[in-house]
Image 1 (cartoon, rainbow, N blue to C red):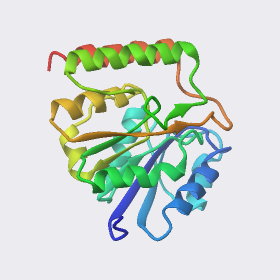
Image 2: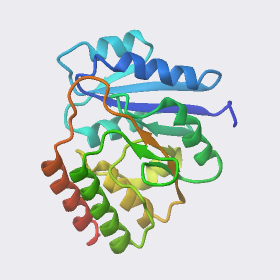
Image 3: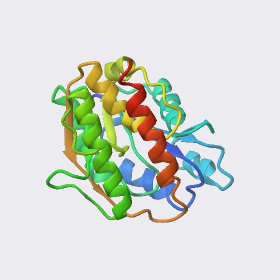
Length: 226
């Protein structure tokens, strides 16, 4: 691995004071020796998330529109040659960061964590969500001639050039689905790497199964026409 590259880790947050310190310390431990920045995009938390993130050395900016908007805002100010998105709830294991980095260094434009290939898995996916994700994956693969194994998962890395080409529009949880679709439509080089999703450590999850499932369906269908 080339430790001279510059890395940006973008983490959207909303009321994650119980987790954010451990997330940041985990990232720092794995990326020791690299040149990097950690960008926390906070949705105007009512707890001490932003204060704790800042005290742990992260750059904190604010966006309260939605996860997609937060990711886009964080990526827009990121200085990295490789940009990594991850969640703030301790579900993403920092020791997988080097796999995500290697994917881009190997010549891929987008490297996506997958819970459904050998080596991946999840502690935090009820049967209904697992079924929904499987259906959405099948639909995207059918409509867009892709070969994904996972869809609604935010642990990913991108080359700087890929971020520009994706030209993302989604403001909410549909952002991950939009990334999958846009990457195929733009002809980007994509690789999936195994990722193990841990159960949320503390605080309240933001995903709402039916509401966000409906939004994902809208993203899948509206991009067919473009």
